[in-house]
Image 1 (tube, rainbow, N blue to C red):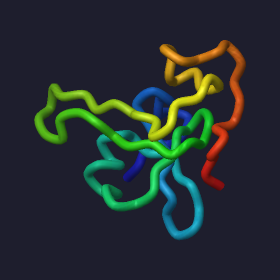
Image 2 (cartoon, one colour; image 1 turned 90 degrees about the horizontal axis):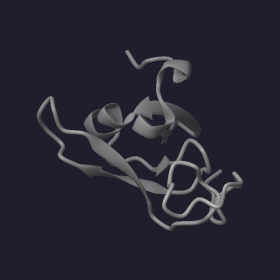
Image 3 (cartoon, rainbow, N blue to C red; image 1 turned 60 degrees about the horizontal axis):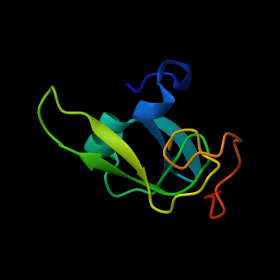
Length: 91
């Protein structure tokens, strides 16, 4: 059972397109159950991939934007300070 979206932190989650709708899941669940499905950032809705070790209890996965932009607070190295949708946001 997937946790409620209110219990999944933005930094350790992504949204996965399942049966035409977006559902927030943990990065672990995205890799384990939805590896081949389209994924987007829960903050800016840009396309993302999941990087990191895919096995072992102590390995953390990270969300990586396919294309960086200045409007996503989950990417502090490029964040401008103002949240804005990704220029190539997935609907």
